Image 1: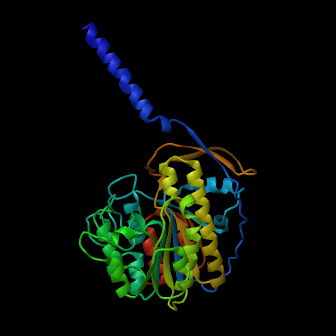
Image 2: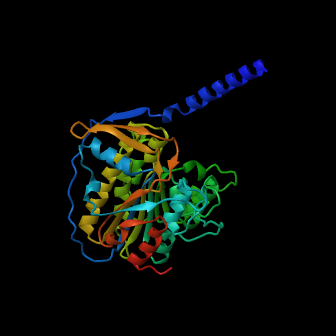
Length: 379
């Protein structure tokens, strides 16, 4: 009996140590970042040419919570282009089957106005295909575009184009881009468009549909009109540089030629990566890259005067808490409580005609109906 007790106590201690070891990174380890690359932030006016927008630019910071925003602000000495937004709210992100959503369900809710189950893209909780705001815009003769820093077949961009029960069905999602994709899309994932098991060469099919297909940013930046499929580098900013700013500028230049207006979705996909890695440097650098891109979009929107800009997130990643920092030096320190997503509300920022519709606390499904209303789209 004594031996059994000793064995039980030993196993209990080993189990406790093991669990503590597994959770060690979430017990208050501090991650810090010292910015050295500051940038000036321009102030934009709020006088617009109409009360209703002609164009909508929806910008999604994947995994971006309030702490991520303020970490970026601290790192850039208290200044962000996001400071220009006067209409601010919050979005509740829970999915149909989980308190903590993933990007598939979170993006589907934003894109379609329907709660979805985690891991699904473009379908409701019963698995039925539901139209996205991008599809409705296209039906109403608006030009459409997607620009991301990850694979085009990742959950968030797929939510606006595809209808699949699983976000892992990337070959099928790639085919959906060819069959019903936007006029312009730029991101990664070229491997799923060629050398496919089904024998289809989707790059050739895109060309047959009138798309200009390129795989370098130099070639992409030369395009000034028409349909465009750009396949570029993925990964964190140290690998891709200022690609998001440049590709967003290309998209705006091309889409602005359409007289009926356009709908553009821009995703900074790697804020999420920083949260998953519990890496403050990774997180803040991606946040600042997103903010610089927001600056380019605001520059366009102010000049145009008929463009609504919405900035939000599909969910928060990392459970980030800021525990210290220095606005004067750009130092920021924080702790992450998880390597996954959280159920926290995420911020919503709006600028331009119709911005007043995007304030307060609302469900992530509200974006679809509000956009349909503000753009006066027929479903």
